[in-house]
Amino acid sequence: MTFYVNGVVQGYVTVKASWYADGPVQIGRRYNKAGYRDFFKGEVADVALFDRIVMPDQIRELAELSPRRVGYWTLNSAAGDTSPYYSDDDTTPGQDLTLAGGPVLCAPDTDEDPTAMPALVGAGHLVLDGVDDHAYTAGPVAATDGSFTVSMRVLPSSAQCGSGRAAISRAGTKASGFVIRCGATGRWEAVLAQDDATGSAETVIDTGVPVSTNSSGRALVYNAFLNTVSLYVDGALSAAATVPHSSDWAAGGGLQVGRAMTGGAYGQYFAGVVDDVRVYAGVATTPMVQSLAGRTEQTHL
Image (cartoon, rainbow, N blue to C red; front, side):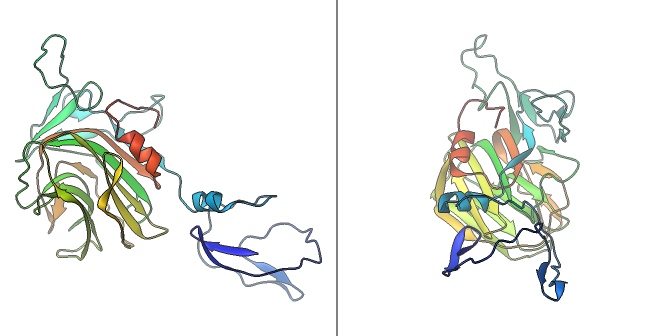
């Protein structure tokens, strides 16, 4: 018998089974001659039993929380100051993005104007001025104290990032639950605060290479089971690969496109173009992140 935790073998023993238990499955308690006992206190979810041997690769997959899309904004269009949440069937509820500060949602017609810069993905993208342009959701999108994945396509207007320019973040009251930004170091960074406080300790992971002014895909994956965070560039793990991170606070504010909350105030406004913004509850696999990094619109993912 082999025992796994989070997909990793912890130990094994040889067991000789001499009897068959024909009673019902018990969750949260066990039975012996004294009756039911050892009641579990806590939360249990995603219980599965198999009538066969499960191979190690399958066990590792079971240890991961499959991603569920909770936010997708194609940024192809806007009605007034609102860019709609994309739903495959137009019935799945979701939060729209409110555009503020005067960003431009550009849907270039390259047939009419061959010199126009094509959209990063799909038919349109959002242009931000780095001064006060941004977009936001009214409420939270995916819990930052659980596993989540964020992806988008970006094109900074300059390789100079100043004190930091945030392409996307999730607001708390004093800090951001996560930020993907062009950092003061001149490299792309993913930053996760340890708690919602001014001056909070942060987990920072960067790409290890200078920012360029080319369009590229960015994805941040946080695995709350393994307490790790990974930063991807165009579908490939960054030079820093995966680093430890653990935090039990959930940022209660909305998703912020083009800015971040620091020290209780918004700042780090992004200058450039953003597109194809996605948020998932759960851990995206590397093949999925590679698919998301494509230049074509993939509404089924």
